[in-house]
Image 1 (tube, rainbow, N blue to C red):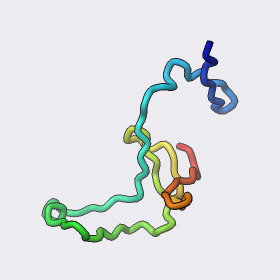
Image 2: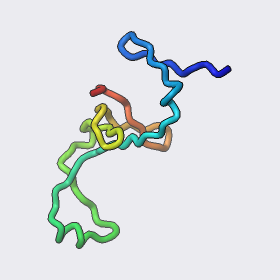
Image 3: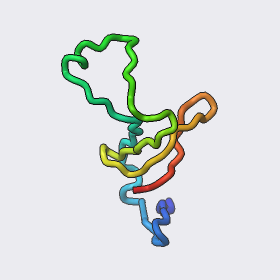
Image 4: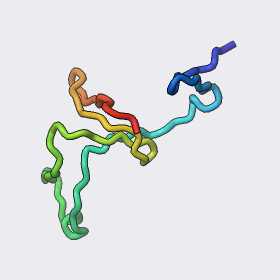
Length: 88
């Protein structure tokens, strides 16, 4: 018999056996840019869009489109990673 998945949340145990298999989408939002529809449609391959955020600015983690945490980008070997700084 398979043991239920349990997660500790603020001292309380949460049984994930009923929902642990549900797929969710976690996205990292680096920043946003406001531009006109004309400029958007004029974009070409190779163009660079400059954002106001600094390279070390916190990023927002979105779970199914809703903000759930803040973090910082970091290098993990030759890939990007996110270090969680704060949970919402």
